[in-house]
Length: 297
Image 1 (cartoon, rainbow, N blue to C red):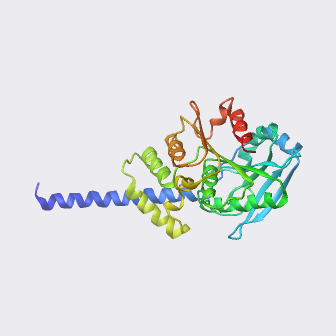
Image 2: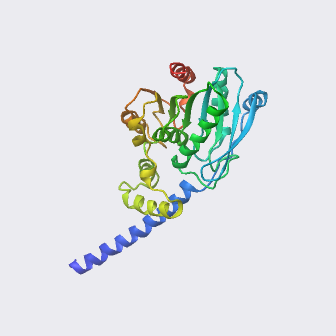
Image 3: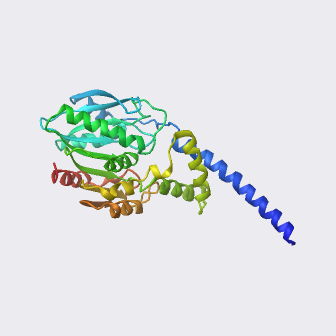
């Protein structure tokens, strides 16, 4: 085969690859950022617990003008609170089961609908960028309402990312500890994992570059804006890292990366048979979390 023909074939393949990568990046921008809440049936026992609780709906305004909603569930006289943040494609109802268990342990709760979810306004999530800023508003709400409040920040998946990224801000002394459950080390790492797993493309960087260009144009954000592992490098608040070892959506290895980046007080807890968001299947899950929280609250 002569050089000219070889060059034409190579150019054709490159063009085909480019179009294929563009198509995948288009799919990913819609898949990742479009508002899409999964419909779920909430078990009756959780609804009964909520209706019997001393729960009020709270509304605040975000830094960029969105109305955000949460339930303040105050079933106990003391001022120990857990702020609970759900993951992507979800809302606060996804946290009812966990909240009920924390209530049994004696904690008051702030169950947050993150932007673009549940009763909060917004058309898309930002995987922790703006959610971590919203979290500052919820922290301030509790600090202003309860003089002696002690706060644990607890997040699952994207909620965990928001908790970790909040450490880039100067958190008040009332925030005593953090718990992240199955959070990702960075959005770039997570999307690269999805491309490899779902599209069987093991060199994802051209697609990541195309996708980031679309992110900048549509949302004004880059991959480097969503990097919990870097936010943890100066964290001094005690933090518990949790992950299921069979998590195929956010790989278990990411929790090790996060743990190693955190320079302050930290504890690591993995659950061998758990998938994504399933570490709570461990019978000792709440016992372990309660033991950690009580060390600092």
